[in-house]
Image (cartoon, rainbow, N blue to C red):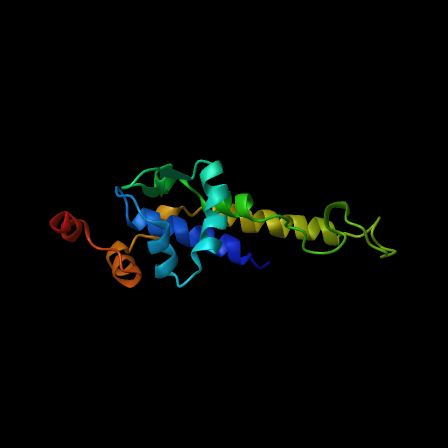
Length: 153
């Protein structure tokens, strides 16, 4: 199974916001940190906001932040939100196929079991788990430490 670019960047956005915990982030800063086009990141942001995983704050000093605690956002939740389909074969879950074995084939059962194991494993990890090494992530993404930000204000 391969996750889409959108899912990959959705997780990255959430990781950035979790690393920048307690402060508003600008989408442009997030996009620059990952060398991604801002319009592409904006498109990805929309379902994250609609689901409540990200909050937006309007206005001159506005920005985005996590809508919930990073520890309560599982990777499974993000992947299920962002992925359109988990079909791993053309016949998966009743898809159309001209395979003569489709009625009595156990491939779908095996693929369903594998998919559930994959999603269960993702459910064991949260966004907080991914940003445990905040100092390294902050430095790598160019997020100013809290003390430095306070001095700039």
